[in-house]
Length: 370
Ligand SMILES: N[C@@H](CCC(=O)N[C@@H](CS)C(=O)NCC(=O)O)C(=O)O
Image (cartoon, rainbow, N blue to C red):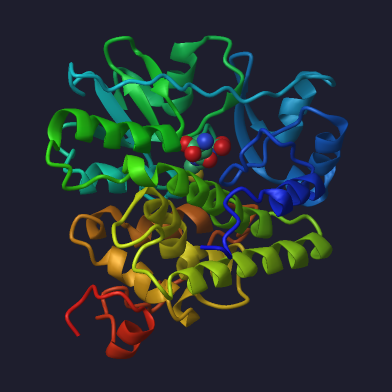
């Protein structure tokens, strides 16, 4: 654990500085949207970023490109708003719907928790299309009369300014978004399960006695892994790319080492941080390697991370939450990353292969019968 830098956000902030993003904005999955300062503006003037398709709302109006948004006003301030209501009380979850994407890693954290905690019949889910449309995410089936996600953001505030992201919790009673932060939703689902359903605490993704450690791991993984793959993929220059790539692989090596002595990130039990790491790892060789140029080494070539990923994948509640087709379609349909829009054939990667006895030895803690 000593190798991990739970509080060490230094390299991340430095990278943001170079990418021209400021401290508060989390790096969005595939639309670089943050223009609050001249420095940020300079970043968006870079040719590669200008071509990035961005669907955002500014004072209730939908824009489809960064340039179009800029035309709104030379001096507009873009501050993406988040909704962070703490919901899920003893009244139950009937009034809520989870809106999620099947290919999206931020949604995946939440859908995995929903499945592991056995809440599939307790919390309704509504998916968005696998591929994002010109007007942002569209719901597979309209929800409370809304066809597009941006309409739901406007239900909260007709003058909404911000990104139109999934996942989020839709409150059917209030007809508004209660929370659109995946980290909160994951935590709230676990808390709900502990408080009202799972009294024997058979599954607890955030045990109080390990809370501090898990918080540190979450920070580290968010910065150095979850967001880092996008920092590599969206690097506007060779120099930044080289640096981001080397930081990403340092962190992967670090975690690989960390998992050489324990089964999961914080010990013998799966926790929140494992789900957050897994969401990136399971996508790594499928899309981040070919599409975001995270190609120094495949995930399959890591001694510990690979069997760790396979083991989590093979957990019966997790496997159905992974949709490789949706993952490939989502990323390879992004024109600024893949101008031809040709979706490559699926890579021949066997996530179901049994963790071998060599891997078993390397990946030290007992988990499969050898
Ligand atoms: N803070 C959010 C970020 C979620 C996020 O970046 N979602 C992506 C999913 S691919 C999205 O909807 N992006 C659309 C956009 O930013 O325009 C969370 O973790 O819940």
